[in-house]
Length: 342
Image 1 (cartoon, rainbow, N blue to C red):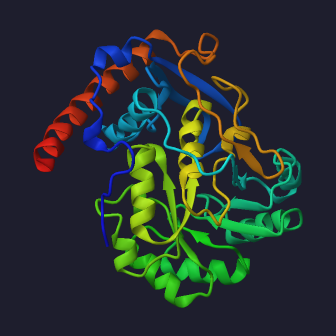
Image 2 (image 1 turned 180 degrees about the horizontal axis):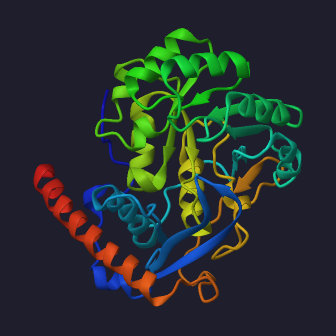
């Protein structure tokens, strides 16, 4: 397996911009949401402009600086380098069903016109397997192809029992926390297994392949460090690929869609339809039309609105200091990578 093959613009082929140049246009914003998702009712993130357009820095607030620095690199790649070449103009996307009551599912799915696939959140803390089964059944009544996402919320035994109760699904995403647990579930059920956190949060994302633990890799541009890093990893893993969002703003979503549009092969719907979860965005959200979203880039001079969504001075300061800390970590890593590449 060849790892780290660089596409178009690799890690050392563009210069890390000065942090003050990044912060010159940076604005932290708060994007309200229609439905609680991932425990949030609003999404805080930061956007900034560079010579190639706009980028986003939106690691969740609980992430430490080491993890968050990959998100900064992804935003800098977008703003200072721009997207890789696309091989398709539209990307198929799935509808997203949060952990809502079953009787609310049909109304929510109206926001996803033409969706052929739906991803249903399961294993929500405080809910039961009966809730999951009912939510999946309500989704199937509208959309035939359903995948479930447990975010590592089950034990192996719970996952096996739950997947048997839920019935046929396209795949089960991150049913358990560890790679070893994923492998155990995969051996026990006929449902394909997808790895998400076991890839984007892992020191070695290739362990899922070595352990024969997954059929599908769910990849996210921001936590993996950018579009090109995502494409390299997707190529190296040799699994079916789903590009998903990290509850991005329209700016961050553009990078996810760009990565999906550049994949040589794309057989499964991507998780890039979460723009419908937001009631306000910094630009027109990527909303599904006939089951797809179109490729769109916020290049230099693109209209991005922040005034009404900007957070207060204390939160602006918090985000700016976070950028400074993460930039220092990136700079140190850049020097190591440059030395290794010589």
